[in-house]
Length: 197
Image 1 (tube, helix red, strand yellow):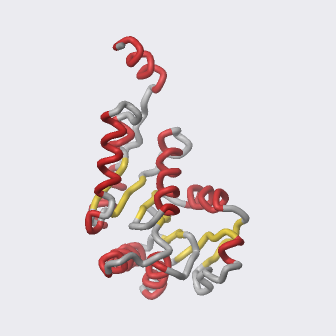
Image 2: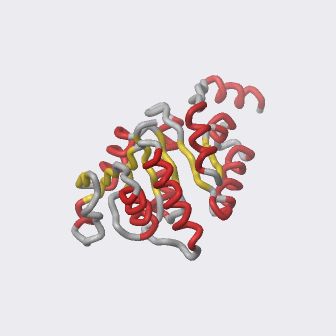
């Protein structure tokens, strides 16, 4: 892994454990010469993540849409700041540059971003691993929701199993190393479901 995209909140959350986890991830990336790619903001967990990586000598690339840069939330001291026109262009550029994706705690934007990467993986638009750092049980309800998708027949188990969910950063990178992208014949599965009715 050379470059990792991290999605996380533009707010710090209500517990210092989220900030400390963002800092721990930043230190891991810097110590292992892995470039951090993130949304380019200086606020919330995003800012903490970038600041800690820079403090430890890491390489940090921010990608921010123009309308957010104009609101003065762009981090101006990064290794590189790329300005794009739209949110979609931001995600596409992050996908193109990265070897894997990590979600720290965050809100709607964080959730939407990591789920778009998961959707693209499901569609074989990329074959890169995606992970959630489940610090403080933050994603527990989301895990239940994913499991219910499988239970109710809206998500294949292989796609659920490709989602890495851990509270330990080192474990996530161990799983990145051994990641194998699922190959599923969706047409065959659809026919089998029809035959079973």
